Amino acid sequence: MGGKASSFWICGKINGNMKTKLIHEVRAVKTKKELANIIKAQRISEEVLKDALKHLHTGINEKEMEAFIRRAFVRHKAHVLSFEPIVAFGRGSADIHHAPGKYKLKSGDIIMFDFGTTVNHYCSDMTRTYFWSKPTKRQEKIYKAVLFAQEKAIEKIAKGEKRAWIIDRSARQFLASKFGKDNFRHGLGHGVGTVIHEWPGLTPKSKDILPVGCVMTVEPGLYFKGWGGIRIEDMVLVTKSGCKNLTKSSKTLENAILNEK
Image 1 (cartoon, rainbow, N blue to C red):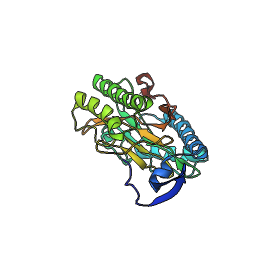
Image 2 (cartoon, helix red, strand yellow):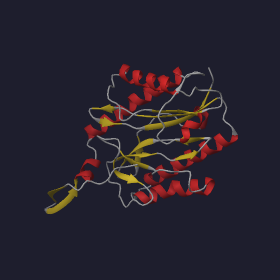
Image 3 (tube, one colour):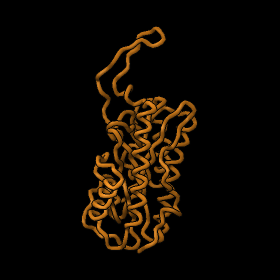
Image 4 (cartoon, rainbow, N blue to C red):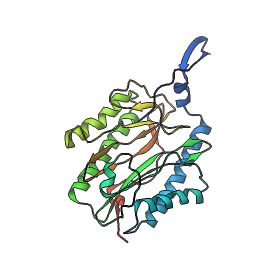
């Protein structure tokens, strides 16, 4: 999660002193107009998510659901997506970058949606996980843990933490203490802008410092081969006083439980 830092740099006078910044550091800080584009893209994605939840039914397969999501974006006048939509049912949700296939939704399945769109070339990114009927105790336990880990990391940013590895560690250590260290298999998040993976990156070894004005995903997940996975992803704006969550779609356990139809 997150891309390599560019080697390009720019110079300019700031308060009379010559300062040098890498291009990726400059573009990470969003102007009001850039931020407005990202937020608009996110609001469109949230409307598409509502459409997708209404369209779900027992027996629909992943590829059919993906096609519906693509059409829904077009209906909302969003023709260029941030990335290929991820639609995963059942055991397929254990695959972090699952490619939708012909697996048909059935009772008891985990449902994972990960998608986003663009407005004036600026991206959005969101993941939501659901249960097709009442979750098992294990499903419920893992969902609650992932949600708590995400809230823990966002709280860290909200309290002013800017060190990427510290933010990542706040979620990773909690999940490792509950489910072992090998089941959270990607970085906690990444910057978002004109490309879906921008600097900085929230990873265990990252030395990045989050600048005020950057937009970050916070997306902990747990994945168990042969069982499934759960990931919850929001975008947050890093502010002087903390952060602002740009994602409005509900992620409570109660709202993650869907009635079969």
